[in-house]
Image 1: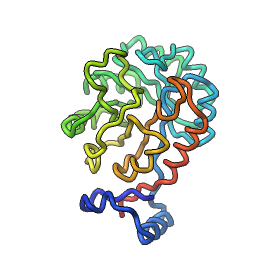
Image 2: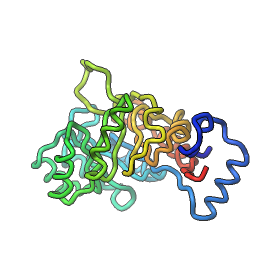
Image 3: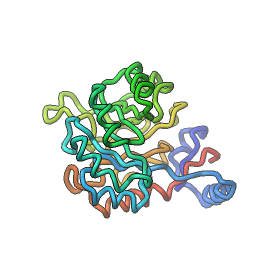
Image 4: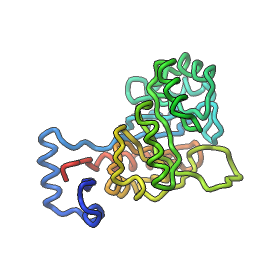
Length: 256
């Protein structure tokens, strides 16, 4: 299944693709055209799960570092667990409202490819982290309305990737964690968004709905955590394989 262009009318965006669509996509591939979305496996806590993610083709692997989460790791622990991914996938250190000392420690000991800011960081804070630490950044934005998506434009010029994640219901009495809730949101609010910046879809993704997610949103990056677990922090190799396989079978083709 190939993602339908956002230039198409709404009725066309959700239709079942026909053989002619597939033929056009195939010709476009021959021209070096559509590529599959990239995949980020996040909330990794075990070396073996990192190895599985890399083996099946994850493009990014994420580690929650010193933040409120059932998948929380210390800096040294994250450095050790992330080693199998070095040079194979982009290593992402996920933080929440981290101070300069923690960020400095993360870069000294983990040496991530990206630092993900998953808290209440302002555009100025993201810019500061990028400039002062020479870091590539990912900014997570909690959304459940189009207004939240539009507000993310404030980060377009200060971060490398924007992640749209589900905004947890309030009050969440069980945890202060910012992500990994397994909650989804109405994908219509990000469908055909006109972000200039690369963006990722997160929140409630699973092997069962990833094909629909790509078809409806044309998200260039798919970010999954709880959807490939059998319990928090423990990934299921079969689910990782199925998720990545399903995702990589999709094609992002703006021409269709």
